[in-house]
Every structure is written in structure tokens, then in C-alpha cells.
Amino acid sequence: MQSFINHYGYFGLFGLSVLSSACLPIPSEVAYGFAGALCTTALTAHAQFSIWGVIAVGTIGSLVGAVIAYEVGRSAGRTIVDRWGKWLLLTHHDLDAAERWFEKYGAASVLVGRVLPVVRSFISVPAGLAEMKRGRFAVLTTIGSAVWVALLAGLGYAAGKNWQHVSKDFHVAEYPIIIVIVLLLVAGLWHRIRTVRRHNAS
Image 1 (cartoon, rainbow, N blue to C red):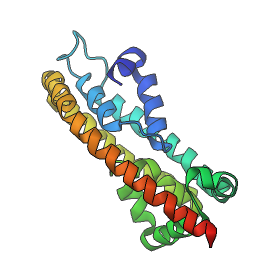
Image 2: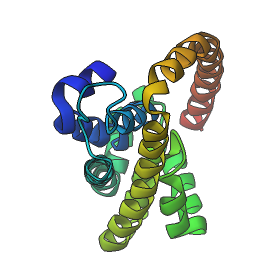
Image 3: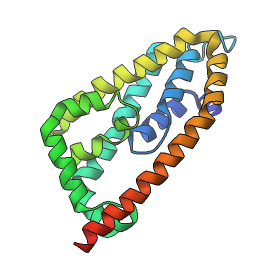
């Protein structure tokens, strides 16, 4: 992640921002934090980014990715379930539940969801399914994304020369975290398979 951003600069950061908001598991926390650190002269002789540039690029990229996910949910959500639902472990019951949840929490879910890890990558799909007004979706997504990017970039900027130390500490902690995540994913996948089979049978 860090090598990619180092090599491609703002273009790399923009690409990662788009992917992380389009339902792909890209660790935006690392991307924006590292980009924030590169706004200082602690890691290189000259600052590679400006903090405002990082916030602008990250926010725009997040909006683009979110719009892609929104349009997929709005135009093809149920078609995708009809064709590939059994492979994606999705049913129309799941879509109905997502729409009900979105109708209950509405716009607040988009705004708050943009600053929640994992949730921020997927919140656009139910917004599209519920056919939330595009203008309202774009405004709330932009605000939430700007807050998220600014927070992480600011933390990276504050870390400055200590970024490498922070990064090493993260690597030490990542193995037990990965083990826990894998176990949870296996348990969740097994439960999901059983749920989908039950709904398909009925």
C-alpha cells in the first residue's frame, strides 16, 4: 500500500479511494494515514503531498467509488441477485431487509456510514436500492468522506517521523487480528450459506 502511494502519488491515492468506496476491501486507514505522513518532511527530504491535496483527492475518489456502488445497487441490485445470488450468497430477502433498514435510518445512515470502517465501503449499495435522491446522496457522501479522510490524514500528519514506528507496531499486532478475522469470516460464511439455503428451499 505504501509503495503504491509512493510510486503513483495522487493518482494512486485517487485510485485506492475509488476502490475502497466501491465495495472492495482496501484499507483506507493505512492509505490516508500514510499520505498524511508524506505531507511532512519526516519521511522524505521534501513533502510529497499537501494535507489539503490529500483531503481533496481522497474525498473526490471516495465520492466516485460511492457513486459507482450506488448506481449498481439502484440499476442492477435485484438483477445481480437473480443471476448470481446463489454464488454471492445473497437473496431477495437480504435486499428487502437492506431497504427496510435504509428507510428506517435514511440519510443519517449515509452520513454516519461514511466514517465507519467496513460499513463505509458498502453503505452506497442500499442507498441505491432504496433509490435515494442522487443529489442528496452525493452531498452527504462528500461530507462524510471529507471528515473520514481529514481525520486519518491528520493523524498521519501528526505522527510524522513516528509513522514508521506506528507502522511497525501495526505489523506486530496484525497477525492475531488476522487470525480473529479469519475465524469470524469462516463462522459468518457458514451461517450465511445455511441461511441462503434455507431461503432458497422455502
